[in-house]
Length: 176
Image (cartoon, rainbow, N blue to C red):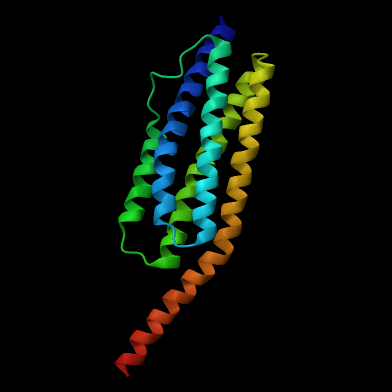
């Protein structure tokens, strides 16, 4: 009985992640379009292709389980994407917009890392060896994406600070 309950929770969590990933497939092109940095834009485009692969891996897991991937809406990802959309609607310029996009993207990555870590553990406990391999591969890619975003942030955040400082200096210079 306990194993059956865990399997139901596992399937429910997989459906949640599937919903999250399919929402992200729609959001990433918008984030790429809003990015000013070529590196950031390229990172979003690369992650879009990866996310499509994540969706395919999840479909494989559902097929092996004899389950349908639909039937659940990931409200967590919906909220993260909504916040990201609000960020893109802000009047941020250039590097500041990129810094804000990175912040939004990293929140998404951390959410995905937590979700994939959880279902991978469930799959291990349930003896779903093939699923463990697929989920581990996706988890590794999500962590790598987060690291790439951190690296980009190191450069872009400094540029955003420089741009903000220049604007502040030009305003104070005009006032004198």
